[in-house]
Image (tube, rainbow, N blue to C red; front, top):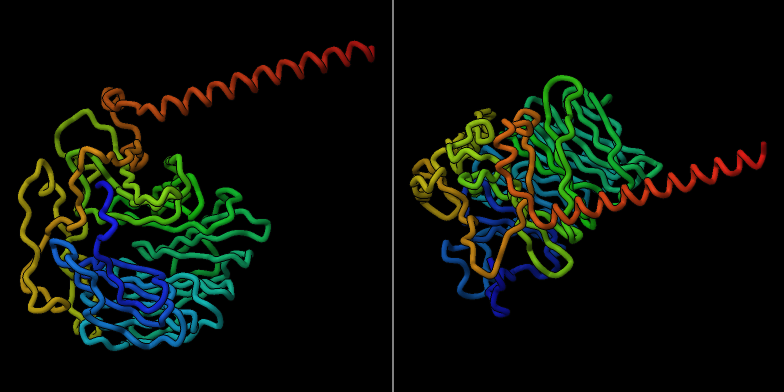
Length: 427
């Protein structure tokens, strides 16, 4: 935390604007980027960081004819990456071999979003033709199609576990909505709900372990979170976090990098208007100093479930998990896997925490938000709730709300007196 030197080395190998970046979930030193120069590049970042500007990529993936809009790593298979571009193509890559495994051209317009399912064998997409599609990631076959939102604005989809998906967009009247689907039948959503009348499309962040969904949009001063269940009404409202500054961009820390001792269940990195990247932690207030099993189920480890070859042959394996109690009270964790090459296969299992776990400096203070994690966790014993300390900002916000309520009461009383006077004059 803190201000970086103005001459801090940068990754500067693209010829035009960088549009998206994605850290590899199976190697904390690998990050992919895509650009308006039509390429996808994969970079190796040393453990100690950059000592000089990085211009040479580990791999350069060429296959798109127009600017590449976004990228996403396969959550369970090693070295599998998808990208989609303004040429209406979605490509699945073998990053290790720098070759395209699949090119999907079923979209008649610009692709707005694409998302792997947690099993890594299906891809959900949204498109400018206002259709939601579920695509087999190995064959490219469209398995299911459903109508999207009525507005011509961008729409996004996120694949969830148990064959579920959530999509966000806007109606013709401009109301932002979410819809919850069974991916085997995309024609009719299981449930839908209006959120507000904001102008920008929500970004969707999914916590598979706690089955929570976070919604946040560029330009918004709020972050909404919900719990997902497999029974009606499927989506449960939990709470709302309202930062002071509008959000320009959001990043999501892997569960391996959270501070378990502080009961941190999520951490966002927010780009804000002041030119800062602000860490925002979601903390569940707990009085107990013991490990909290209910909010820390096993999370995805750094080790992939299968190799590229196994994935290509049709294997479907569950993700490999790690016990988050190994991160409690600074317990030692196994060292990162040794690799035969920077993009090669792992030679040993690893449950190391993410390299991006920061060390706090005295001049920097991350933002902390009290966040109920689920309907069960949001109602802890009363003594645990009393143990949480309210922040100064929350107290100020409460005082402002009380002042507004009192003002409204005074206005209502004045109007009632005026109505009574008019009624008496008519009599």
